[in-house]
Length: 114
Length: 108
Image (cartoon, rainbow over all chains, first blue to last red; front, side):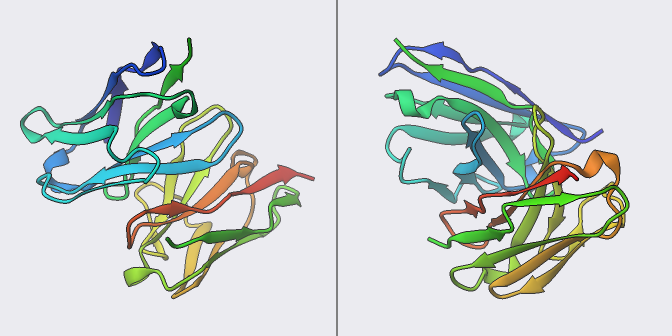
């Protein structure tokens, strides 16, 4: 079965840091671009960042540029999202996702609150 | 930034009916890199269509995508009970990637 399993997330104070992980299962993630997408409760999907196969092409939404860092370890079949200088408005469910092979992670809740 | 406008915002239909969703882009989508995702409340989204018209693995053939350039359509030929959900289009041809606001399909 092709899937991506997420870990990390939780409650953090404003200004704090968290790292999300997204581990691929049933396929080799090194062949594919991976995105991070977030969703606040009751709202739509918002793209956050993406990384290409070998990590040489990376892009971010303006809202997270300079604070979030996407990376990948193909040997571990895993992609990461390091989130620093977190703000209350970063509170959301975060998903990793690929267009190919067409997989979404299960989502992980990040809550930024004092 | 490419803005995606989905219409209608809500569709009220009965099981067995045909559903048609529109996604209009503010500028041409590179290489027709347009995807459709389905999200059932409380669940993660699921990819239905990529490249405007290619069904993802395991997606039933009642789902089809069409269109090019700035105008795209998702069609469900006969609604099944499990199809009542929110549908999002997404362009992934240029950064920043963007999503439409979604179309909710509710039971009439």
